[in-house]
Amino acid sequence: MGAGRLAPSRGLRYAKVFIPPFYRRELPVEAGSYVLELRLDGEITITAGRLGEVRLGPGLLRYYGSARGPGGIRARVSRHLGLVPRRPRWHVDALTARAPVVQVLVSLEATEHELVAADLAKGWRVVVQGFGSSDCRACPAHLLALG
Image (cartoon, rainbow, N blue to C red; front, top):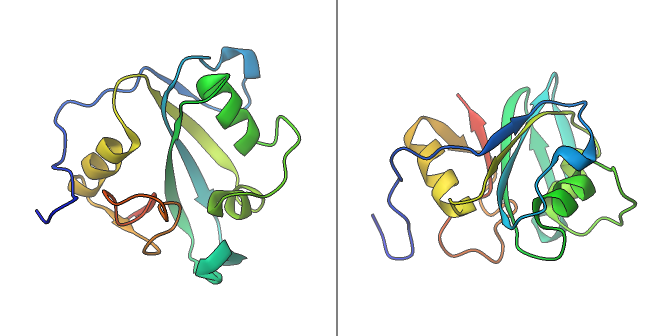
């Protein structure tokens, strides 16, 4: 494994899995990591910041993020799901505007980098190099697809 890459973690467990619709207050206010699982029924094209136009095919996608600021996971995931007003800021904002989130996985212990590494080891693949990870040196992307 090259410099800056994390080895896949073994035995990573999620603290809780939320399947929409759920109440915002059910999400933890603690800091941690989260995974938005999205399903695309067809191909879409989105504009993702400096990455430009990105074409995504049908299937299951996972976006990995961290929530370390005020309100923790609840605040960040609520923003992504449109439960609070927002202006587009990150690559994933263009995706969540077009694709339904089918579940949210939460970890209070593992970093998003460990979650990405674990899923890559399980057969998930990078969809677009650098998507959601422009400030990350540990991961090739924070958006993976199954299959």
